[in-house]
Image (cartoon, rainbow, N blue to C red):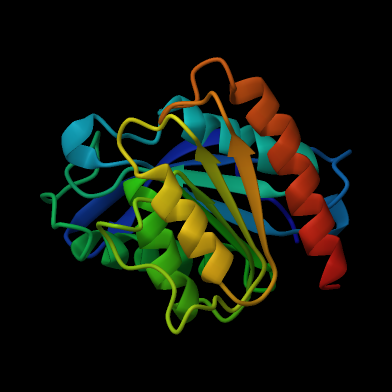
Amino acid sequence: MTFPFAKEQALLIPGPCGHLEVMIHAADDGGVFAARQAVAIICHPHPLHGGTMDNKVVTTLMRVYRDLGVHAVRFNFRGVGKSEGDFDNAIGEQEDLLAVVAWVNQQFPSAPLLLAGFSFGSSVAAQISYQVPKLQHLTLIAPPVERYPYARDGRFGCPVCVVQGDVDERVIAEGVYQWVGALQGMVELVRYPQAGHFFHGYLTALKVDLSMVIERQWVSIV
C-alpha cells in the first residue's frame, strides 16, 4: 500500500453536510505493525465542550498508532474547526465517521482498520464499529456509558481496550468498570487510580500502556 500523502497532511474531504477537516499522519516505518499497512481513525470529545481533533488525548492516540506503524487519521466532527455543518447529538456525528471510513477505504482499499475515541467520541466509534467489516481493534477512552449507547448485546466484533481514570470528573468511573466487567469477548481495561477525565499528568503513561495493550491484543488475532 503506497502512502499517497505527505508525512503529515491536512485535508478537506466530502462529508454528509459539507467538508470534513481531516489530518492524516504516516506510519513510522520502523513500527512493529508497519508491514500490516493499517489505518486508525480517531474521534474527538464533545464538540460543545471544546472537543476537537487537537485535544491532547486525541493527539496522544495518534502518536500511539503512528509509532506502532499504523497510519493515523484524526478529524473534526461537523461544526468544529473547518468541518461544515452543526452539532447533531452523536447522530450526525456517526454519519461523519462513516464518511471518514469510506474515504479511508477509497484511499487504502486493502487496509485493515482500527477505531478509537475519547469521551463523546468513544460512543461514536463504538456505535459505528459494527458497520466496519475490516475493523480489527477498538480503543475507548473515558467512555460515558451512562449517557450514550455502546455495545450491542454486551459484545463488540473485535478486541477492545477501555481506558478509565478513577477520579474522572465527567464520567462515572465505577459505572465504566461494571460495564467492562460485563462485556464479552476480548476486552482489556487500563485503569489509572489518580487520573481525571483529561489524564493530565498521565499522557506519557497512557501512550506507553496503550501501545502495549494494542500490540498484545492485535497480535493475538492474527
